[in-house]
Image 1 (tube, rainbow, N blue to C red):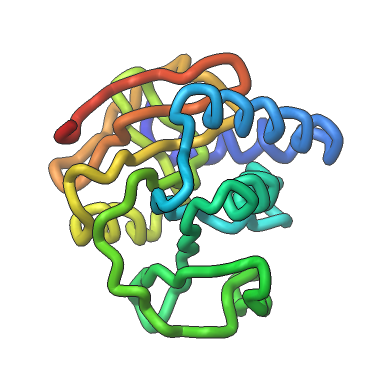
Image 2: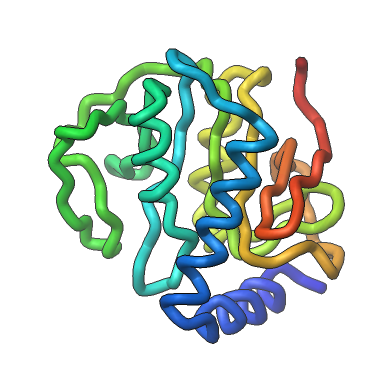
Length: 191
């Protein structure tokens, strides 16, 4: 299927989930992530903040778990047309952007390029690690700017069932996909 078709299909499937279903699936995904990757104190994770109106995966439970373990947490913030990475703590103050995304008030880019894990938003991911996002290209640009050793991890309510037919040369595939039922490895990076 084409990205536009997959984007529409999986946006509808996501919207059909109740708040309770989405939260339960988010907990299962977090459990699978923690069991598989076992993040440790001092490691660095870049994780997206969910857009509530799109019924995105609730990464706030991941963020809380990471901070409790002493994992350094970084979140994205769009400044002009760039996605920067802001380090947060339990005391970080957030505000809602014009896009409806909760972002840190601070616009200070951490300058960090070496993450242990980059948990990436998506609507769909196929069996090769190709992802369908919202079509803005922020994460493809971000992936190009960070260390190739950073593990690019998609987190999604749904397992891959269909291929993406219109992948183009600048699309950067994920290394892993975490779903409520499994962790898939497409490993494209450098160990």
